[in-house]
Length: 480
Image (cartoon, rainbow, N blue to C red; front, side, top):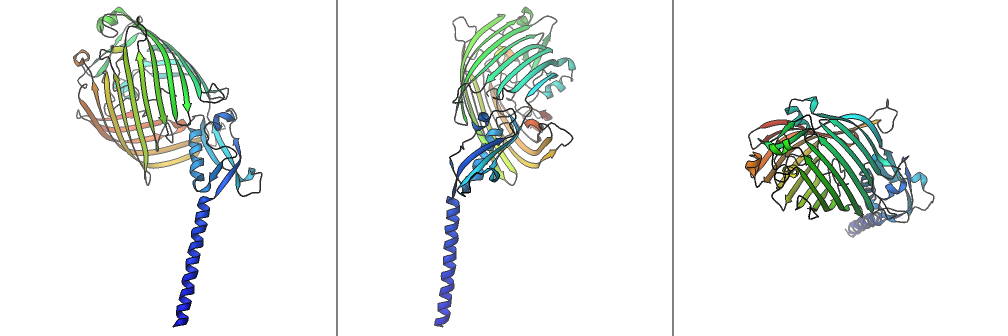
């Protein structure tokens, strides 16, 4: 009996020692670190190294904990990818390039595949708010704008953007944009400029029955010039501050004024004013074009009418918040809230924008415009990843186009919104000053160059069941 007790005690002692050693080894592994010896960058034939390094929080000489190494490298790769300069971006350990035999050091390698940066071509563009409205108006090709554009998205390899657009057809428009994201060696100050001039012979002069009504004439009904200069300060990786100064001048014809005396200020045919604005943007999404994880927040405050001679005066604020989160097993959820308001409720029709424009759309109300001086809206989504794959296209020799990513998601959603209008009878718009709701299911396709196409089947509070195709992004994209 004593012998059995002794043997049992020895076995228990060995087991405890083994468990302690395993715990110690696990603790050492979790606490183990490596010193970054070097960082090499490959694949950037045009892009300067400093553009890529600006997105990294790892530098030679830094210490990285092994337990969080993969997560840290993936976060750096996502920030590089979100510059929208690359088809793909990877940050990985490069054992082949390590110059020291010391196991306490490591070498990192950034591997990027660049986008195609220079675009120049004739094109056709919808003048209507979205594809569904164009189809609803009879798919009339006369409602298209035809033109040509030159767009360089990485000028001098410094992420500078130069864009020239000339359009004719439904609208004659000239646009020139030049953006310099980094002016200083600290790479935190940028300057953005825009000039635009347009002449319209076809104008949406009013909203009747919750839809835009147009007037057509051979002569110009509206001429507009707009200029804007914007200074950006980037704080760290995810915070952006903008200060912008702008000027806008709009002139309309007498026939347009007669159709809608409130198109500009009452009974006027010319409108001039300056704007001064401040915008704060926080953006920590994994993919700014098609997010599955992260959050973003935008706050915009601006003064319209700086001079005593300006024709319109008001404060305007805009808020937006979106949160994206994985739910596990290829399920994802997100919700979004938006709000906008003028302090002056007597907003001229040409500045009156509520729900139905650009990204401010309630699914299920795609054919409608709901104008007002203030609105609030929200949406919630749950989606299931159905398919995710990248196809090699070996028959295409250009590296920027020889892979085709294809991601499919089945979604269920609900939207809601409320638009306040002080003069609902003036616009003949029955959807103002009431809660609007919708729900539905859809299919989302995320593919080449982060293009997103959404097919939605929805039902709204009007009792209408609709099928719409949506190409808009979720959040406002005017701020870079």
